[in-house]
Amino acid sequence: MRRLAAALLALLALLVAAAPAAAGEPRDWHPKVRDARAFADTRRGEVAFAVRTRTRAWGVREGVQFRSASVVKAMLLVAYLRRADVRDRALRAGERALLDPMIRFSDNRAADRVHARVGLPALSALAGRAGMRAFVPHPVWGGSLITAQDQAGLFRRIDRLVPARHRHYAMGLLRGITAGQRWGLPEAIPERWAIAFKGGWGKGVTRQVTHQAALLTRGRLRVSVAILTADNPSTPYGAATIRGVALRLLRGLDKRLRGRVLPLVRRRVPA
Image 1: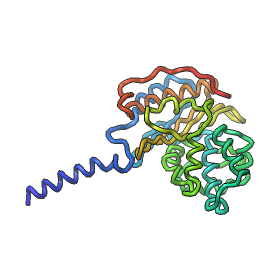
Image 2 (image 1 turned 90 degrees about the vertical axis):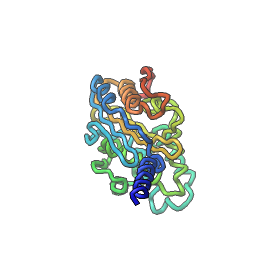
Image 3 (image 1 turned 135 degrees about the horizontal axis):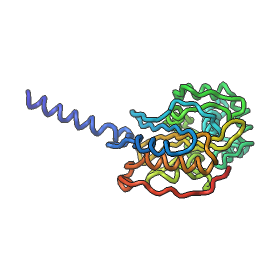
Image 4 (image 1 turned 180 degrees about the horizontal axis):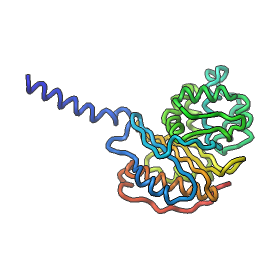
């Protein structure tokens, strides 16, 4: 009986060890929060970030609220596709003509029109559905308040929040951001990982912000990241901050990146 009990305990330990990977959780990896924080402390302005896997969470200043800028457009996309009159039918050409540029090119006029159709109650309902604790919608969509914690939580399950009929379409938009806006996190992801993300930047009516939130996938593995910055001297500076934080956070996610940090490359980013 003792041998049988020992064998069962050993088998249970093996199953527990294998469970995270089987459930989509990277095994034997955690974000390098200390390195990312040390880098963030050398940068001008304010930096907050959060990382989520299926069962684990990390962050620095992840509960601090920032003005959303265009990051909230990902929520506008999901909220629109969840509408009762949209979720179970094919999208019309006119709807695609708004949603595509709003996400892929971060078109503000398209966002204005989608925001008018969605409304603040639907954004709040989506935030509740996604488990977001500090999201505050604003009549001017870019003035909505977000946190790194909430955005990482949203992006960890963003595909599952979209109705099944529109899931492939929505994720295709978030994976197909135009080349000129693929700075920051997309430059830092390990090889063989895919990224679906949305960025936001600009001064607007308040302080300058540069943000990105993303879902990283490789097969069944899933990691979400949100990096929010404010009071940057410029948008390219904020983009470089995001890239530097992401490179350090994600080190080791792919073994070929283990133990090294790639040099920062300055790129021109649209203001």
